[in-house]
Amino acid sequence: MLLLAIKNLLNLIINVTTTTKTNKTINSSSLNSSIYQQQNNIESIEQTFLKILSDLDLNEECQAELISQPLEWKWKVIISGNERQKQKENIKEGGGDYYAKYLEKLLLNIEEEEEKDFVIENNLVIKKLEGLAATLRTESFSWLEQFLGAGGLEMLQRLLNKCNSRGSSAELIALPLLCSIRALLNSTIGRHWVQESAEALKSVAWALDLQSVRCKVISLEILSGLCFCAEFGHRAVLKALTQVKLLRGERTRFQRLIDDLFKEHGNTPRDTARVRLALMSLINALLKGGAAEHSLEYRIHLRHEFLMLGIVQVLEQIRSAAPEGSGSALDDHIDLFEMMRQEDEQEMQSTTTFDSGSASPIDFEILQ
Image (cartoon, rainbow, N blue to C red; front, side):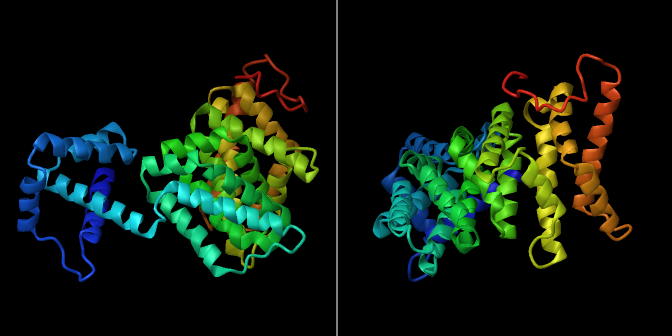
């Protein structure tokens, strides 16, 4: 199904980009002619196609499937890529460095007006940032490399910090910034840069302070996803949550998660359910990902931090307030939390190698 989706996506790109302004598409006969007139060397076509594949950031299985496609189809992809590149050059907005410079300019404009209320009322700015988020989901590996190399992630993080410090008045700009960071997680290079950036993750964790339901949910989704990006991603998320507690003046790193789990959000019960579902997804990801996956001691100490904050009582209250028999994804996550807790307690009873009642958070850098 994934391979079919990739092929269909490329076919869609071909159909769009080989259409002229007069809606006349390249017909099959002219296409076949151009293959032999412009590029009669089959080996050269294959090499050009392989360069395009390298930009798609696909795994070996997907690449093999696309390599097996007919020569004519590959040539269409090559033509498509050339047309897209020409369009970008014409509008001079296609390169990753262009967007990175745009973010830098926006940041400078905001910093020059620090004494004023930071309210973004320019719809063009919002649309530009929304366009960036969409672009980051679909662009090539080399484009992302250019954007990141030009400081794109740093600009996103610094702009997000401005939003965090201004609260609800800046949520219109915070949303596309968070969407852009989430979009980076779709690529291997993007994930690497995000999880390597302690400042970016701290900004995402800090964004949980924003009142917008969508901002909260996206922030939680970013953190949850990184918990399963090898062990380093899990450790980076814990570090970000630990660091951001100082910005809030809180004593424990999970206090905000439990507080948000307890209270209502948005304007409807559905908004509250969305935030709670995202919160439980992160909590379970912290207890299942990274070093926690294989270390009982790690999970026990980590879970104990949540238990000290009263998570059991909060979950009981959520269950009691829900209509009877109203099974939902949130119920499933609560069930998973309880199931993992019971399994670990049973396993813990068979060993006495550590003090399960210790109230001190474990040193996660040592226990690996």
